[in-house]
Length: 198
Length: 198
Image (cartoon, rainbow over all chains, first blue to last red; front, side, top):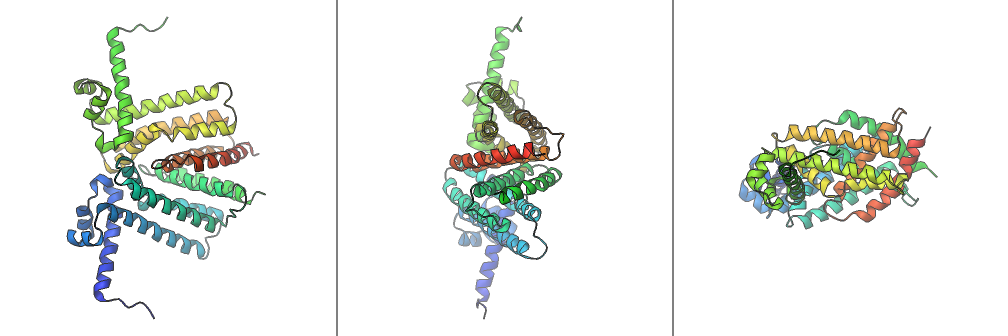
């Protein structure tokens, strides 16, 4: 038996989803300074009052949006890799790097950089970054089948995720996919060797 | 025989230097939106008119500042590694990663992210990023003694620089040095092996 929700609860959930998605795309497109609650409400097709009912402050809205998107991407990636045909280290490395080249990474980057100049934003974003970082690490370990009880394996995975983040940054202003594909192909071997070394 | 300069030329050069340094620290501290020419002139102790004489537009000032700092850091690193006692791959990897954790990286990051939301800034910053990227790559190849005629060596160096960039991003809001030192120590071995593999 599924959860029973009233039409009103459904509408409320749909409004919340629309706001979260609009917040991520505004952040990716206009940056923090251009992304006010009013701009997001407008894009979501929702009244400003409704937006403020769901998210009392601007910080609430944007951190919830980035966190929500991160969870969705992480679930989607686990399903993708859990399915048929995506099994090689190259496939996994490529899929994880792909997480850092889309709108979610752009939005998160805007929030991180804004927090570096706005002390009021910093504590929330630092906590959010730590949660997303832990979850990304856990996901990478699981997908790569890495055994972290062996010395060096933890650092291999951490360094790979830092490389993925750097590749995301390199893709911010220009399409870096040709260079990136070459790096992903080569580093998949390096990572595979490092994870299987005695 | 050295170049003869007049006191006036010396003063002009000193003013330019002060503006470039003030521009980088304002960018790192206040971000693009908080870094106007007036704010930089104030911090440099220079009149706004003098600032505009040296750099007609805001874009000129900030791209010149990031480029100038990148050249200075690159020269300093070459001298450091060219000197005595900094010879192991670990020393070199550590020194290169260090370039991405200081105020220059913070300033460059602010400029890259601002350019992603401001079409007027994008072309200059894309060209600047390409020049700095090429120079960083050349420097890393030289310092690591990498032979790029061998297959995969180019991608090893590129991926390492992306990792360094990702480590810089991870250090933006919090002191990430403990985690980073572990990654640098471990990846120095992996990179050394990858560069010397047949």
